[in-house]
Picture 1 (spheres, one colour):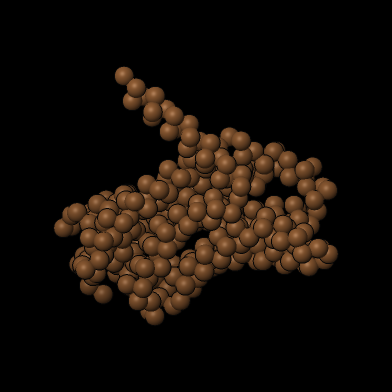
Picture 2 (picture 1 turned 45 degrees about the vertical axis):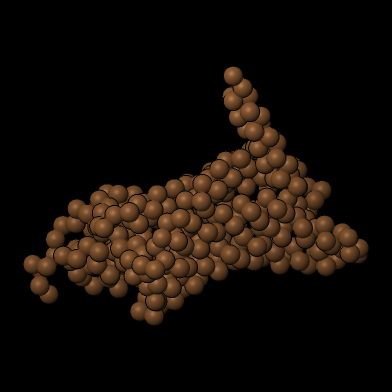
Length: 313
């Protein structure tokens, strides 16, 4: 190995969508709209009247989605306007760490939300006493703390690797696999450890979610009336759809072997869970839950009234 080609990295270059020049203008016009809609929509949906456990967790998810998109989108939009989009070494560390932490937190939050639905449908009489505010607070705090502690070891292993002279990251943000491709040393151990940790923090919550919905489906099947079945299923259908989108894209992007991944296809699916999915999550919950729609209308009317008053001379 020619160690002269190694260097201590002080910055990386994000290539973004330079391999798709025909789409750059369209993406640059589209992504700001999606970003603004996601941020504003999630802020409006976090209404103080949504004090039930499910909507307490939904408020946490809304805050997480805002952090998700804010970590990725502004830097990505800037890459459309610059010839050479540079991100400093510590900026790359921060972006990957926050992104990884939020991904783990979302896995755990979705699992907790499925458990909440399980209690509400399968054990309605004891639901209020079991899922009280203190328990909700402890579950949410556990998700956030675990999420931000989990990636630390992998961050240390990744960013202590020697990187080659080329600092071009073939992605629109500092993702794990594109960074490993820049290393001048053998990364099989880091990849194995990363796969093991990722499997634990995604597979365990996913299995818990599947178990919750298995029990939910069994309970719904025992409900005698069709109306009762529809009402019970409607309380968890939004969450089930969000879980399907989230895990579906995660498995496609990170489940395939590294060598078999098409960079363009990888970026497309990465857009799904970093940019598109947060917007879809908001729309899914807003369109399928009367409480959320009511909160959005209430807060929206307040904003509209304030704007009208401010225009009065």
